[in-house]
Image (cartoon, rainbow, N blue to C red; front, side, top):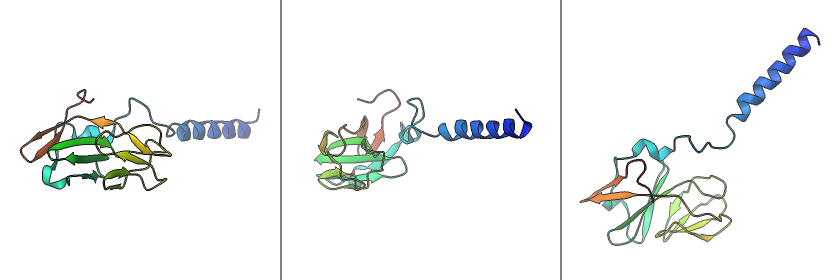
Length: 137
C-alpha cells in the first residue's frame, strides 16, 4: 500500500468516526431540561388555562388543562425530533402535524405514535419549578 493510499484511508476513516458520532442521541446525553432542574421556569400567569406555552430554551411545554393543574412535557416531538412550536387546546408540532393532549401528553393525531416525555413540577404561589433529576413520572 502506498503512503498516499494509506493517508487517504486514514482520512476517510477518521471523517466517518467523527461524522457518525453526531448521529442519534445517546440515552446518557444531557437533555436541555437538565439545565433548569430545581429552578423556577415560569410563573403560573405565563400558562393560559385550557392551553399552554413553549419554553424554547429549555425545550419544555408547560400546560394548564384546567385551573391550577399544571403539566410539563418535552418540546421535542416523538415523530422526528422537531421542536414543538404551538400550544392551543392541544400541543401541536407544525413540522408534520402531530398533535398531543395537553393533560396527558398522549398522541391525538399522527404521524407521531409515542407520547411526549413528561416532567414533574412543583407549584408554589406563582412559581412553577421543574423537579430535580430523578423525580419525573
